[in-house]
Image (cartoon, rainbow, N blue to C red; front, side):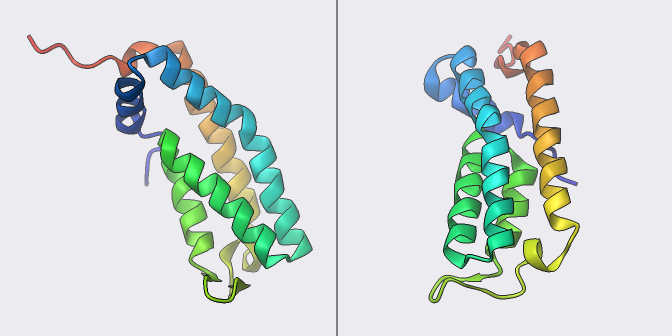
Length: 132
C-alpha cells in the first residue's frame, strides 16, 4: 500500500523553495482546499457532467502530485483512466461505478489531513540527513 504522503516529494519541495516552512505552507494550502476539491468531485459525479468530472479530478490529481499526496494521486489517476480524452465521455468510471469509491476519496482526504498534521508536529522530518 502506498504511503499517504511522500516525504521525498515534500523534502524536494522544501529544497526548491529553500524553506521547510514554505513547503509546509504549500501543503497547508492544499489541505485547506482539499474539502472543496473533494466536494467538487462529488458534485460533478452526482450531476454526471463529464466535463465537470474531468476538471475536478484533474485539479485534485495535479495538486496531489505537487505535494506528494500519493494515495489521492493514485485514486484520481484511476478515476481519470476511465475518461476518454478524445470525447470526454466517462466509460465505467470507477468513482461513478463503485458506490464505495467516493467514500474512499473522502477517507484518503481525511488521511492526508492527519498526515499533514503529523508532519506539522514534526517538521524536522523534512530536514536533510546529516552528511557527517
